[in-house]
Image (cartoon, rainbow, N blue to C red; front, side):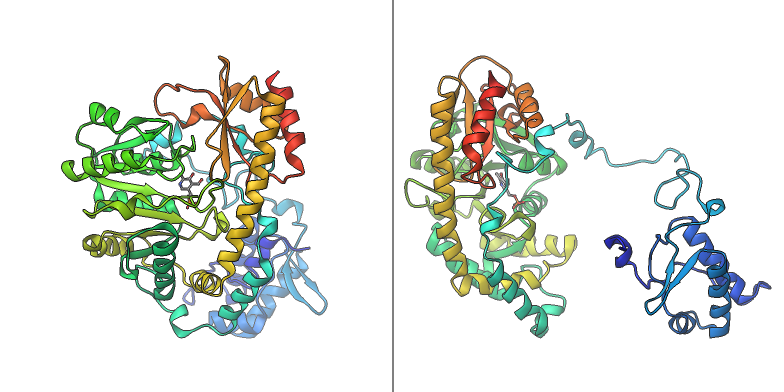
Length: 495
Ligand SMILES: Cc1ncc(COP(=O)(O)O)c(C=O)c1O
């Protein structure tokens, strides 16, 4: 079988320079071009070649020249023909034609001289290995119960919009995104999340990560001070670091971000990144008084609030908590949401609710970044929501995750009650199992990964010295059947 990568390049012409002023005959130039492309691995084994007629037309040379070149390449074993299917690059290259190790066009043979690169990303490269990210399965963070996704409905909507696309779907669009989706989102956010917004303020983005990047570009300058939660979300810290922000880790207590501690550490931040509905990773819900305190502080100091509302649709012991943005009367809050948790992360669709006066700035920056978001899945998503499938899916998944969460909490309490304290299990798709005794969580997570348990150490969520150690356990992608056995294995790891 031809591997997918090669299929993708089927019939594509490699770069072959045909020089009509050269004394070398055209068939020889074509022969040399193909031979080099194969030896260099620019053309892969098994790759389909264009028809001789098509190639002659494309290169503007006679078909005889192409036939002569192909005949030679077939005779020497660079090409092979398969009856009824065409001509292909050989799957067994003649031994003398094999490139020396490392001389393929996909790897660099030269030792590069000095080359200047931005210093910005260097801070992101100093990473330790993270074996808990190596596999998929029990406790892996950011996984959804994808086997319960309504693929039938989804695929019928994809077909609807692919087979008969509206004209606007295939053209360049505006930087804010597909208007019907923005209208749908505005209605959803007003009703379900208590967000005060109009469709004009909503920009569709490729997930929260792009929302944060855009926000950083619009709101911050290199050196701007930003409060981040401690412990907090590394994705946010990374993108803010890349923007050149100075990060101030502000502790989170049982009421959420400790605003007083923040004021003491950094009295004039340019922005504050918060996850008020379900603090990442501790799972605390920010209390009403803290919310008002934060909004008041932001108003007095002219700070922006980046509200990252990544998984608040899943709340198990009460209705979802209204967004902080809904309490804002001073256009301080940039509200960020995503479909990564409620549908699936590979969709790469999220949204920003932008204070109305900042919309032109966000739009201008977005246009400079990637012009506009891809439209097909925006149209699919609009119908998915408008036709009621999203609401139904949410209700079903809430039930399923509630069941998984209860099983996990019960199993931890039963099997590991003396070792682990469960935190933040009221919402979302993960909980924290904090260590009750003094130990480092990283070696435990490494050992757990060796047993196929993908528990993330809590300590990596701290920018400064960790004040708690524990394991962050995702249960979105861990089936009810797997949970008891996974907790038993975790007990073996801990003891
Ligand atoms: C705090 C937080 N925000 C946002 C996201 C989702 O990011 P995205 O929408 O870019 O997939 C996650 C995913 O784990 C998260 O933990």
